[in-house]
Image (cartoon, rainbow, N blue to C red):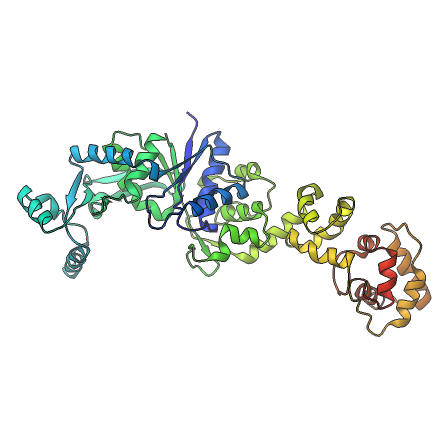
Length: 448
């Protein structure tokens, strides 16, 4: 059977680069194995989940090139979770508990003070029907805990290898809050079982959850999927990523002009055995990503590395891939190819081309310095149009012959006058785009 994977964000904020990592690991795994990829929106937190964030998640995934085979929302499946909860209650695996958060905290502190692990003592299992009725008469409403079976929970993790968790070291997890709303754990298991998820690929912060969920799968009579827990992305300084880091949100990176494949490559190749490199599409990236080669150490996301990677990717893009964006900058279609070939090696982002189109198109105030004689000779050396890539050499050869200047003393004053800058693309390609009229005006010290 073909693998089925899923990405399950909560629509309570914008996706950031750390969220992109599990989304991509799942999508790439599906591509590599010919499987399916589902997008599940975990929107049971009605106070914080919004349709706007849900729409933004789908938009951000499309920007990365991820198109799910299906999308569904947990808020539309509450009846399914209710049915699963009733099954667990009938089996004696889901039981009511009435302690308040303050009572649980005091109990936890007493256990720690006695040198005991702060594990829930299952006091609620000892309550008689009369005691439960009395507590409810006080106005208490129960939360519902899943009774863990004792023993060792084991699984073979695709990233971490053989794993085990001692169930006795865990508190029976709360699956349903006092107000009847569900925590993450039960709906996730029910959805994975019903949608036929075969592989759960997620961050290593879910390792302990896996032991609990394996027992819930078994209690519901559902097949247990294969698990893979990858390392987490951090900032370059080691700080954990969160939704408050807006500049590292996918829409923030998009607005900053980064290429989606640069973001995708850095998001998944960082912290793996593969060198970070530019890729052309998700198929190429999928061929590089092997869960068995993901490191156990934290993966540090360096924004400066993203700049370098993005530049390398941009330098290799053909004009056809950026034609729409060049048109948006005002570059005419008939000049786009020549312009792109000249400037792309000088760009970190495609949007940086706007500065070089301004240099070509003007108006630009030249920097003429103290070289009027040299510039006068250059004006005389300008040949009639049409110009091509050999025109720059023709001009500089003429100025060199007339003045005896060479090297920086020759080229820098001409560049400053023609572009207003002391650096930039090869003038052999740039000069024909500037054209004779503008070049003549700039060499005369005029804004053009």
